[in-house]
Length: 280
Image (cartoon, rainbow, N blue to C red; front, side, top):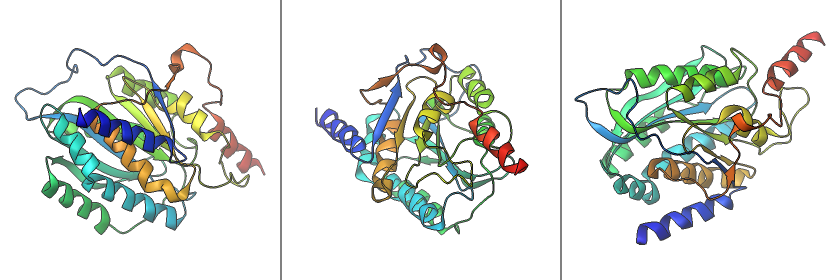
């Protein structure tokens, strides 16, 4: 009972962080993944954290984002969610991305099973210098994450890609192609659209990034997103999202699965804006 109350508080907190939380109502798969590994240590979830470091993110945002993930992993809420799962541990890897082919692993697959391993992972996150890339390839990040799942020595009951970003895909393959490839493998993609700045018409920024993420990026069993609209609530939003992912929970508010409707924002809007910039 205490856990149910605690999770409810976390969900409410998420709604307060600028904190629009949206989820896709979808049942969890009952069978193991087609490529499930045999005779390997089980974990509650295989979680890939994919963090945007493209040039549209300023250095302050990058630092706050990095610190937000480190603090979330050592938080009592995260550890409580960890202990609630059947294996009481998760496998996590964290990489930063910008253009297609520019992906840097901050730490490879690690098992978090308590405060000590959580502290070690948080330390790895914080000790790496903050960097910036160029353009934005969400599709490249998803495809890179798919390869990481193949290399993971642990077997999770769920597989989740946690992807953050402050703009639409404008480089590499169309984002929906990569998204659909992940969904076909039973992988869930959750989103963290960052909307703390006014869109700049000199870039490929868009006003409705949250709708773009809902309709073009996230998907799979139990998919959801947390929208960040307040810089001061950045870290709280990250913690809320990680807790929900580790606990295998979804917010109460649902959105219609993308396959059942037309996207409200073109899934090629970033590519189109990029081409327009090149013609100027």
